[in-house]
Length: 107
Image 1: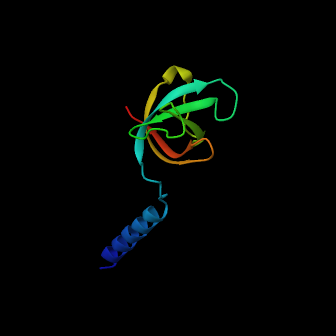
Image 2: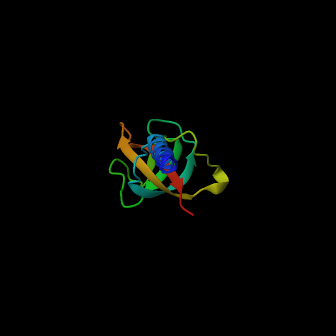
Image 3: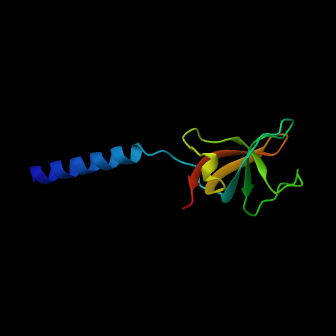
């Protein structure tokens, strides 16, 4: 009886600790293609550009958006572009920049 009680106590402790340590990540809300860098200088120009699937940029004649922010742990090189990704994002700012909160490569 004591052995069974100890087993269930350890199991309950493990379940509680495991569920308490998980982060709530934002859900992906689309797919996109990171096109690459642009060295132009000026308002709303330059930086890295992304094309959101099914979401044209209403503020530009181009179909792509400027990437405003992205997670620091997401690394990419010019050799790997264009790059298909799944992202969680918001669009904002004067230039309609895409702020990425979560990103994952599609293999």
